[in-house]
Length: 258
Ligand code: HXC
Image (tube, rainbow, N blue to C red; front, side, top):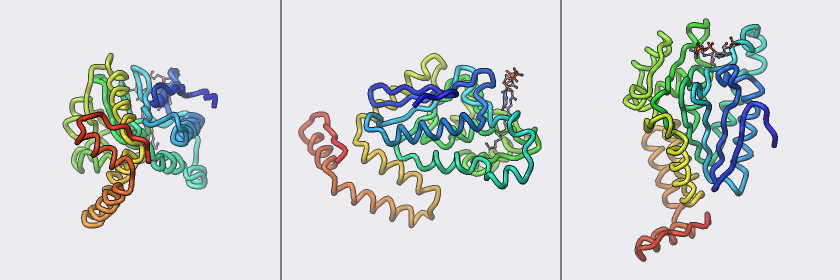
């Protein structure tokens, strides 16, 4: 499919989606969000894709929802259209692993879209923030919910109430990002991580993603039960037999997603 506000490339089973509205620091307008959801769903359905990377430019992953587009909206508009609910639900429903590779600004909706991905690799230039309070609104796609689960109440309150930005080092210390790399190496590192994931059984990777994500929704005992049931179910797969046989035979596993 041809897109206007994003670029999509598939190479070696990795789908790279690049947000591409440089004139607005990749601000998330409705066209971009619609295209992003469609591209993610296309990648999720494609036999050629085993892992997805979402990235922006050197200057901005995304500087937030598009303020120009939102400025004239009324309560009735946003309530009736359920603004941003669809984006959240569609990205959350993607079953293949998604890595966010973030350089520069990831603010407001940009930080929230990064947090919807499965993990964040940050360039040393990355800046995260929920500055919506400066605009007379609050976060609307997870900045008060997902961010609090990532970094805890105190830091989340600090970010949401003062609107200050967190640099990459602080974001790693706080648990928002999984690693920080030099900006020039961001895409290489993200691609290497994605290729590592793409070599695994896709079935197992999808099950692992599902299990980790349940930890957000369930009390520990129910989460442990879910994990155990999924773990047990892996023994019905050929990939479990292959993975364990390969270890014992001291060779690389050849997974077939079966
Ligand atoms: C629309 C935006 C934008 C945004 C930047 N631009 N952010 N347009 N929506 N969120 C545009 C600017 O208007 C400008 O266009 C161009 O991008 C370059 O931006 P500058 O401000 O000139 O760049 P700079 O001085 O380097 O400052 C970068 C910045 C600043 C610190 C990131 O742009 C900024 O504060 N942006 C807004 C960040 C923000 O408040 N995000 C939260 C949005 S609300 P022109 O045409 O003038 O060159 C949100 C709600 C979430 O996300 C709710 C659920 C999704």
